[in-house]
Structure formats: C-alpha cells, structure tokens
Amino acid sequence: KAGVTQTPRYLIKTRGQQVTLSCSPISGHRSVSWYQQTPGQGLQFLFEYFSETQRNKGNFPGRFSGRQFSNSRSEMNVSTLELGDSALYLCASSSVDAGPQVTRGSNTGELFFGEGSRLTVL
Amino acid sequence: AQRVTQPEKLLSVFKGAPVELKCNYSYSGSPELFWYVQYSRQRLQLLLRHISRESIKGFTADLNKGETSFHLKKPFAQEEDSAMYYCALKRFGGGFKTIFGAGTRLFVKA
Picture (cartoon, each protein chain N blue to C red):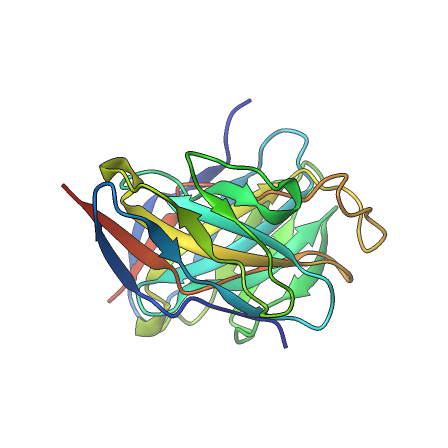
C-alpha cells in the first residue's frame, strides 16, 4: 500500500495570505488527523475527520479549518497567515472505522504519518 | 483535561548503557498509550503500544496506572536508537484524538 501523501512538501507564504494543504490517506483508511509540529511545542492536535465529518478539534483559532472528501482525502486551510504559523504540518491516517463504540483491543488505531508540509510564513 | 508529559527534552547515553525515557499522563478514563519514534529524515512511526505488551527493537514499556506512567526502557542502547521519541495517549469517545508529549531526543554515543 502507498503511504500517506502530503502536498505540497514545502511552501513559503507571506503574512496575511492563506494556504491549503492536502493529504491523501492510506487506501481504506477513513480517519484523518492533522497536527502542527514545532520545535518548542512538539505535536499539537488540530482536528480529526472521519467520513467527511470533523469529530474532534484542537485548541487552534478559527483561521485553521479543514475538510474531508468522500474518498477520504483531506485538506486543511489556514487563512490570514501569521508568522507563528510557520511549522511542519503533519497528516496521519488510521484504519479504525468505528467511533465511540469501538471495542478496545480489537484495533488500537495506530496513526500512519505523512512526511509533512513545511510552511514558512515571512 | 488529557495531558502527556515527557520531562526530558534531551537524553544522552553511551552505547550499551540502559536507557529510560519517561512519560507521565493525565486522563480520567482508561488510556491507550503509545510510543512513536522519528529517526533522522524518516516519518514519525509507531514504535509500540501498551495494549500489545510487545518488545520492539529491544524496547519495552509498561503502563503503571497507579503512577500514571508509561516509561520506555531498553537495557542496552545502540547507536541506531538515536531518534526523537514521542509518548502518545489516544482518547476514545466522541471521535479519536491522539495527544502527544513534547518529545525526548535520545542521543546514543559510541
């Protein structure tokens, strides 16, 4: 199986612009999560999508948004970019299908990560 | 609130020495805990999960609910173990959310 693919790998934007990042999960994976990785903060959870629905959201401002398509591909968008948005944005997919009713032990929902999109805001 | 704490940002040991990477968590329910590793120029990947009680690359981790810890251990460190290690907690219910600690960089010296 092909791994999680993220595009673009690198991009440079200026303050005030917006950016859209794309993530193609592993075939058959329906859960997609997004993280912001910075040297000082580590991995910060942005949101998680399953079957085109956002099920969880982290503590980020409304400038950060996302969506998932029927083929499980996901995009995240950051509007009105700020210098502090410079980071590596990681996407991860998981094969766990069920929601809260999942039976523990049957599938622990390992996250499979992409290589990330490195965003630099000038 | 759920939280994962890795108190050491950097851990440096000599080859052949034992290594322990600490991880403490706070979570009101029963946690699912993981260790992820990122080697140089590679993707972040799963190392091991507590529910499997497995040993991967010589590493083990035991969940201690009393101390709310999930420390990663290896009796004899190797140079190829040098990497960034992240402890993670997966929350079930209302969708999935995996929370990561800040990470510990392990450097194994020859």
